[in-house]
Image 1 (cartoon, rainbow, N blue to C red):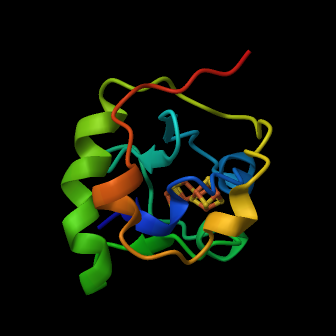
Image 2: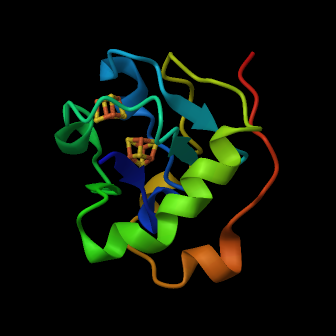
Length: 112
Ligand code: SF4
Ligand code: SF4
């Protein structure tokens, strides 16, 4: 089992999750984060920290379709361990539908 970052992280990216992860298994894309499924120890502490409620255990149906995306991009995106600056319009995007087909960026993120 692992925890999975799902669609509502896209363009929200508040990053409260990365600060609490004991094994630093979050990876940063241009407009969302993912969890490395083999590094996550299933502690669950990140789940309630996410204001967008985007982190789910992989036992939830909504997480299943994002599991492969988390695996794929955690192999190439950079590791992130500290909260960066959330986009100025984060809150406007919270809860919007169809963010994955319309807004997902496969580009890596980068913290200064
Ligand atoms: S706190 Fe939630 S929305 Fe923010 S970066 Fe983490 S998973 Fe994404
Ligand atoms: S469940 Fe625990 S180990 Fe997995 S990503 Fe969240 S904080 Fe990190």
